[in-house]
Image (cartoon, rainbow, N blue to C red; front, side, top):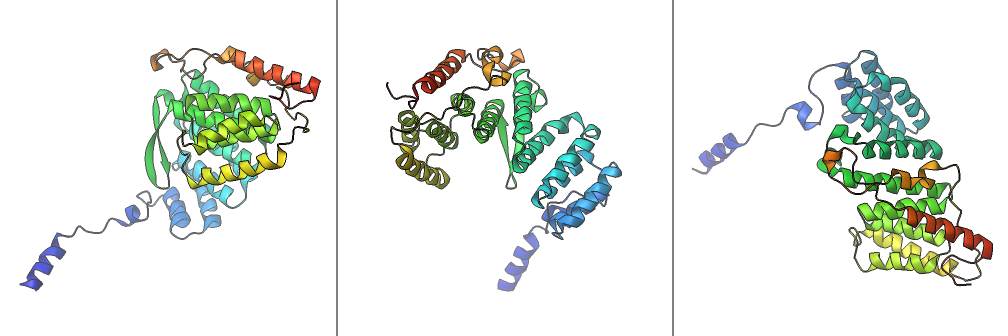
Length: 313
């Protein structure tokens, strides 16, 4: 009887998934499929890059082939080549693939230290959102991370892009511009990671009282992600930096808004009240010109008095 039950159980077990499903490969035997097999199964990135080239030249799934090849090149420390490949072949890709290619390019510019190009592309993506052109005109898009799919809203995407723009301005030591976009990102979709970046930005301007207020929000768990180990480690690092740089004698290090940076200096021209998605002009650019002017004035006063911002003269 036991043997009979075991046989019945075995008969009820579902058959194993097909090979391509098991290894997360596209079906078929085209050049692109062979490239993915070499990349994911054989674990041979250099050979995969060559096969992705062949897939592109053969016109086989060009959108995916260009993106995947660039990603593998980045993993192989060939980021400059990856940038060239995207720029060379993106005109052969569909309109739907352009946004995804821009995301890859932003990461590549960041890795190569090409900050100005990264900033320009991030601004372009914000303008697309403003004009309702992002996500191919849809209010959400499906993203993938670690093999899992999830939905991203326009609001979340806007905050993410602004956070990346803030990081880029930090690399240029344009701390007032970084602060403006970090605060904007926190208004739209706050989280602990961007709060830590904003705190770092304020510390660079020797504005410790305001920085402490931002840190306290994370310590008190008021922001999403406050309890993440990564956020906790960032807080420990920031608190150490507080202790090493807090002396009042430190002169103001805030750098004023770049007069050539029309995007940040003219943010008020891009702002509009939050409205419905149907308006096409998406509700991400509230009027913040008074805030921007306040930042600029603070930097000017600080430079004249040679005192840390936020410290009374």
